[in-house]
Structure formats: C-alpha cells, structure tokens
Amino acid sequence: MNEIKEKVAHGERLSIDDGLFLYESDDLLTIGQLANEVNLKKNGRNVYFIENMSLYFTNVCEATCAFCHFKRKPGEEGAYTYSPLEMVEQVKERITPGVREFHITGGHNPEVPFDYFVESIRTLKEHFPDVTIKAYTGAEIEFFSRISGLSYEEVLKELRDAGLSSLTGGGAEILSERYRKKMSVNKATTDQWLEVHRTAHSLGIKTHATMLYGSIETLEERLQHMVYLRELQDETNGYLVFIPLAVQPKKAKAKVYQRTTAVEDLKTIAISRLMLDNFPHIKAYFITLGTQLTQMALHFGASDVHGTILEERISHSAGALSPKGMTRKELIHLIQNANRIPVERDTFYNHIKVYEE
Image 1 (tube, one colour):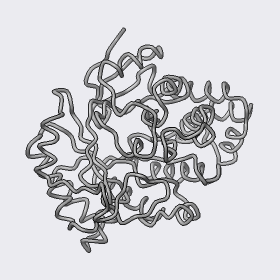
Image 2 (cartoon, one colour):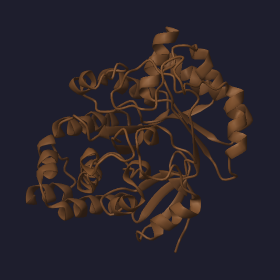
Image 3 (tube, one colour):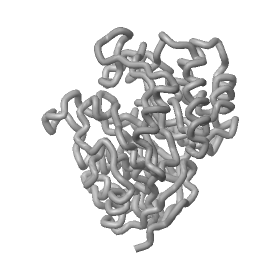
C-alpha cells in the first residue's frame, strides 16, 4: 500500500497488479482517501450534474445478453418501436424547461433500417434544436454498420449530420471476450467497441465509457477493461467520463447476496479513479448505487452524479431499487449534503451554474 501511495503522490501510473492489490485489500478508507485526493486535485470540491431525459425509441433487440431484462424479441408482449414523431409527442408531454440533453439508447432492432435511427435523431433535433443529443452505444454503432453496409466512420458522419453530438458509454459491459462469450454478448466485440470510439474521437465526437461489473467477470478483467480505456484515452483524449455500473439482479426483491455490496461499489469507484488517471471524471450513477451510496462515492473519487433522467428503464427493468429519476433540487441537495459544490453542466462539462452554499 505504501508503494501505491508513493505512486499516487508522484503521479505515477498504477499497474493491473496495483489495482488487484487494492481490490483485495480490506483497507477501504485508505483506498478512498487516495482516490479522493486524486479527484480533489482534478476537480476540487465540484460535483457535476445535468438536467437531461433518457429516451428509448425501441426495446426490440437481436442480442441475447444474459444480464439484460430490457430487451424484447420482435412480436413479444411488451415490445415497442416508436416512430420519431411519436417520440416527439412523448417528449413534449414530459420535458421540463431546463432539459439540455437527450440520452438515447435502445435495442438492436433488426426490423427497421438504419435510416430509422438517423431520422429519429434528425426529427428530435428539428423539434428541440437547443437540446444536445447524446445517443447510441458503441455496440449500436457496430450494429448500424452491419445492417447498412456502411463503415463506422460513415455511420457516425450520417448521425452527426442529423444532429448527434456525443455517444453514450454503454455496450462495453466487460471488455473481455471470455466474458462476452459466457454472457452471450453477441454484439460488438472488445476490439469493435474500442474501434467505434476511436473513430468517433477522430471525428471530434466526444464519448463516454461504462463498465458493467458484478457478475462473472474476474477482478483482472475489470482492471484490463480500465487499461483498454486508459490506453485509448492516451491515444485520442476523447472520453469525457467513466461510469462503473453495478449489475442489477432480475428482481427488485433479490436478496442482498445477489447484488453488489456497498464495499465493492465504493472500491470500484475509487480504483477507477486511481487507474484512469487520464479521465477527467468518474461518475457515481445513482440509478445503480442508490442515492445514499452515491453521496459516499463523492468522497471516494467520483465527481459526477449523472442527471435528472426523468424515467430510467434499463436498470429498473432488471430490479434497480433507486429512484427512476431525480429533480434538479434533489440532486443539488444530495451533493451539498455530501459537503460538495453542485455544478450544473452541459454534455461536455461546461459550467452552466455553480450552486455555492
């Protein structure tokens, strides 16, 4: 631990072995203190949030990921695919004046052409020109490439021209082919997911990165996942934030041993902050952590709590116990009561308003 402390103090990069030592250590407070020190140097006491809406155009999906309870097969009960104008009407019914971002993910729907996904973005942008569109995962981009015959670059350019400004971080799950085979992640491979993000960065499109931890992956695989992202960030500097996501059990009433523990969640936040030295932000996602543990995470290296969301569906379809969304006032209260400074941001972490105490 003293060797790791020295590395952190001198800004030296941690290895996978260092990360493994931290995961296996029971000195949670020291790990948290190290991550907190790194975050304070990068971000001070600022904690970021955004007023946004999560939108889901379709839950029809060809993939068979074992951890997903959001997807439906074509024709299955509960399956839906909204037209662009239907989504516009839904947004009009629910949008609040401060919303500045649409966060869009969904199923890999083989029943509609690529043009459907492009038109979805274009129509939203035409009706809500002042709202930034953060849409689609690296895995969805790979899927669009397959169904359209276009390259990743061509797909991204079409979406950018329609109004897309940033990619979401999903589809990464665990960047390990052993994991992806075992969990039936029959969508983008590790190399394909990384190449989509590399291509987006080359086009000036900033992206996000997630890690879905807490199932069958090894600690080494989690850490290798972080190293893959760190290496690409060295190359492109195109990532805005890293989002560790605790996998959710199938039922809301799942027993404690079927969920990740508070210790594991805080360790993962802190180790992410220490390993990903070139990422500006680590997100404490209240949807998978819950609000109280999110507050704790702000002292374990996290500097972002996501946003208002309004109605999250993917994690809640798998049994998340957290609120489906929060108000601006609730997020400000959450951050201030963790002795941090709430900063309302846009998609790219530009300051909109600082809520000084």
